[in-house]
Image (cartoon, rainbow, N blue to C red):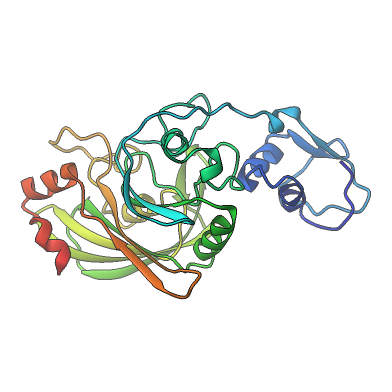
Length: 303
């Protein structure tokens, strides 16, 4: 491939190969599987006209993703998108050797490939945003490429209201507050995210709904949608999520090996100008620990 304009290398390839996610392209550049003039470069490298671009054939390899039956809880749907209530212990899309049992496999079974958007990547039809494996609650699924483009833009411009609920360690001196940091990959562990001065801006607003000695139930509204944002932010202010095996690292008496985090509300302005808002209650496991700890019941979320 020969460059024909002055532009960032990652954007140039992303624009030319729309079916491949830009983040995947960036990873290939960092790994040296995409080079310019036979030299390793950064994703921010600006091309010059005539630059020769080498792309490893691995970038074009496609994993065969097969449909698989799954009980998907649909909260609302129309011809453009669906709102679902995601269960815990469910990976959103295939990654690495995991090609079955993901939400994408279930979506393909329910809607078929032609019933989902596909410009977000061949391995993630219908996926416009993600929740962590063990995070429960509301997700948007796009059925058409037009709806994907529209809703993706809303997420990018911070125009989607996202409200989460979490059970965290400790009690707060300030019952309401804003956490504003910069986040990026942990330099010591690429699987983790961390607060870093040269990262991307991340903003979370929290409010304590109920607390007992040593534990708090909090509502968190996020303006940005960085990977693991809530988990990193709450740990950053010394209130890690109960059960979080990656960022919590706090001993507790409960037999719990995953975070208690639930997306309870999503809101956005539809293409016709109507504001849509969707809510789902916390799941049974979350409510069980909430009651065991003395943090109230379902009525807490109605205040």
